[in-house]
Length: 383
Image (cartoon, helix red, strand yellow):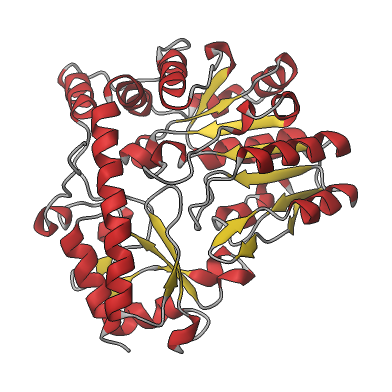
């Protein structure tokens, strides 16, 4: 079994200047934005160091090894055969999503989202002048699932697309192949498209439901689907600016090719280089990360039971983000605000993820067990 990855020490992390560590004063433990606290994978460090040594900091060239690197990674990790000619880069996943919405929906048309969901899914429509229709996830006991009947009704009522979050943020749900196939059938029946944000795809927790790429589930999915992926969440590369769009048909590939060249020019050269290193040589580091995340999930369950017994948390299938129900604590619709003010722990505000987020908070457990333990202990002191 792979040994879990160790996080950097707190005194080192506080030297970072990224959002997670520069937003709040030093008395706050930050467990909010989706950055992780681990050292970079050695192949990434080596690649970037070598580039800096020769001043290789210019524009991204027209042809790189990135599509082939991702295709090989997808085959290894998921058995997904990707045509590198149908991989186009952009600067980040939400830019890819925004451009796909613009390319597939006219101003005023409706796009389905499934709350609780990543907050930019609500605001991305400001760019395309589309409107979102919220079809919340279903809560089935301890699990979450797509409301396929509700989505089908939304398509029947005129929605032309859905923004799928797979694996889902914040619940960590890896949607089943059966649900994805039914979603694809529904979209094809109504002439809609599926834009699948798969940024957390490499982060499937060992022993839980595996990630299924949307474009692999059926012929219908390949016809209606667009996937947007990145190494950024998995390998902590958000600041390097690189993501990619994957298609599975000539028609959809042509639609992506018609997206303005400027979208691709905004990809960062360091993002391309780090992505190639991640997808080519990052598997051992990734396996160690997944071992750490599995251990941290178990630890978080135990910590909440000990210190915040009123909290309800069901571990997700993927990612390093925990969706925690704090309604029984009496801390109001936005418990993260109370926790920041009085416990000096920064979490993500539940209501930012939509109406089902009232009384909830999102905890980033992509850190060391010592930091996670201290954070939950502080939160428990409020009870």
